[in-house]
Length: 131
Image (tube, rainbow, N blue to C red; front, side, top):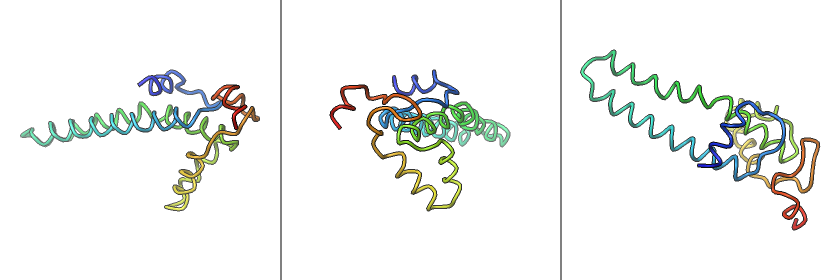
């Protein structure tokens, strides 16, 4: 949960680098929260008798998605910086299928050892020396 909160604290910080663990832990916790909100809103909306109540419950997942949109983009940009790529590579995901696969490959790659043009290695000096 610390990784999730760390990303939210760096809400709109598009500079620097983010470790793989930071990105993927945020992704996992964000996914689990989204699933829980979707399940609860669908369950409550399905149990309601009125259509307006059911459609009103669908606003909760939308609000959550909007709340984490900018932090998600920011951590994605920082993750790409960690691999030595520009944050603009996030736009490759707009290409159907192939773009998403390429982006996933970029996001799972290890950090560039040492510092790069985006800053110091977030793993620290000791892990940079191991590589």
